[in-house]
Image (cartoon, rainbow, N blue to C red; front, side, top):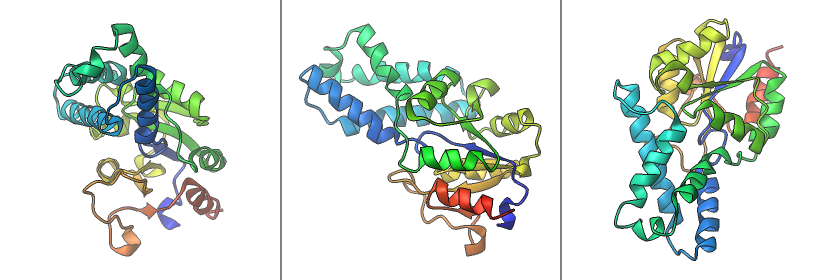
Amino acid sequence: MSELTDVKALLFDVFGTVVDWHGSVTQELERLGKEHAIDADWKDFATTWRRGYLENTRRIAQGGTGPSSVDVMHREILQDILDTPLWRPVGDKLTSDARDELNLIWHRLNGWPDATPGLYALKKEGIIATLSNGNVRLLVDMAKHADLPWDTVFSAELFGSFKPDPKVYLGAVKHLSLEPYQCAMVATHVFDLRAAASVGMRTVYIPRAGENIGGGEVKSKAEGGDIDVVVESFMELATLLAERK
């Protein structure tokens, strides 16, 4: 794998790439619904919550204003959702403390089946770290919950913006004392990979169910695309890196 020959560090997107945010959040919401005897489309609630996060992080990455902590952002979005006519019957049953606790769902997301074994295997091949829009405490709690063995945690919160702002990628690279080409961004979102490539990083795409909405077919450079490497699992990526030796 000549594309990864010089790579010494792998930086991972987390929401969607490492953890199944939609399945995890929906499951927690369904539990909440049973607890409070609320019948609702919890899959839609989870999708709406996530959509608000994507809209806000992208707006701030482009120079807009807003909270630097995703925990704060998620809480504000949750409040807005529960104030809408559609979801007000749910909101009426949740106290402020209950809403605060609900917001911590995002700290307890479960990894995809290959995430934990794959990361342990990849840890033997180089530095593995997050590069996520999630705030530091969220990422640390999630790592403990899902057994994600990061060497270090990089959050966009540390760099005063959100992906895909180039300074987020360059900030992480700087702290690793590496050059961009020595770092690979691993993600299931093509916009994330293209932003990383724009500052000189290598790119690794991994497909995850429901995450490439409207993204079209993703191809490696060897297949005529613009991504350095396409893999089906973290274990496959670990095998490719081991073969460099």
